[in-house]
Amino acid sequence: MFGLLACQSVPPASRSVNEIEIAPAPAQTPAPTKDDATVEILLDAMEEQGRTMKDFTASAAMEKFEALTDEREVRRGRVVVLGPSGKEREIGIVFDELIDSTGRGSTDARRFVFRGGWMSEFDPTKKQAIRRQLAPEGESFDPLRVGEGPFPVPLGQPKKDVVREFIVTMGTLPDAPFFRSLAIVPPAAGSVGAAGVTVSATESPLVILRLVPRVGTKMARDTAAMTIILDRTSLIPRGVEVEAVNGDKTRVLLRDGRLNVGLDDAARVILSPPSTDGWKIDIRPLNP
Image 1 (tube, rainbow, N blue to C red):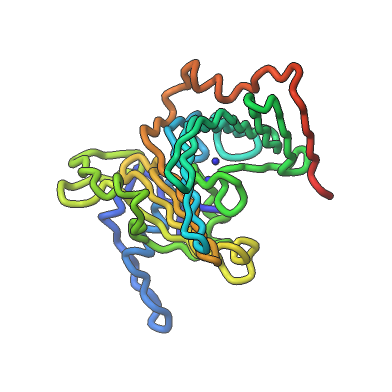
Image 2 (cartoon, rainbow, N blue to C red):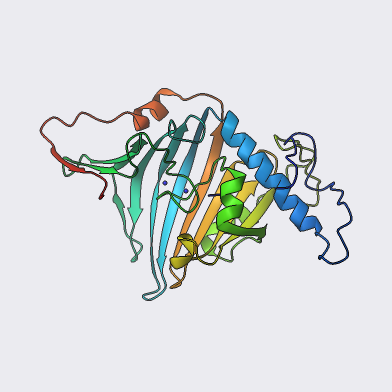
């Protein structure tokens, strides 16, 4: 569960993405567009969100689409995040349901916990736990970091990392049935959120960024592009699409996202490893 967010830093609450003044550019270089300025403001606000985040919870659905076979499967569950971006961040993901390529549903009781550079997978059905080391001891690893983590739900990504790894532009909602519910969300007219963005009665309540990996980066080997869908007022992620170079796609849809409201008992259970007495334990250190 998924580097993201360059002129002078702009306080997130001070300007609207709809009210932007652009200084004239030198004659020998193309003048920046309004979209360029909008991207800068969004990335600044997302980075600030990461520094101040305490917790986040949401219902999650993840779709895997294979281009070669035209098959897809969907997993449904919840995601819980504790702490700001960086090595102290903890993430718990639990899947309750699996819908396979035939449309048949089944229970999926696996739970994933990311903590201290390790990903632990707990499967109570098989009574098996697998611990995978994802980063050297003491090194920062954020499993939600775009281009690095296994679950593409970007929350508060450092802007310098994003612009180093990606060309970022304003995007559009992917044309996929999986995101159909986002296409019909009514605007929350008059609402103002953390980025100082006021939503009018005629505009979408979403903002969408498209990220294309820069040539020569690690991400460019496998990924063609990413689309990140955010709530316009809170910048809470609503959806992500990752398109592989072979046409495969991973999509994540988030509902009922709650930011900095505290964790209830059910959320804390997701972050807490279950008792593994009598289980098979498989520990896989980082390959040197």
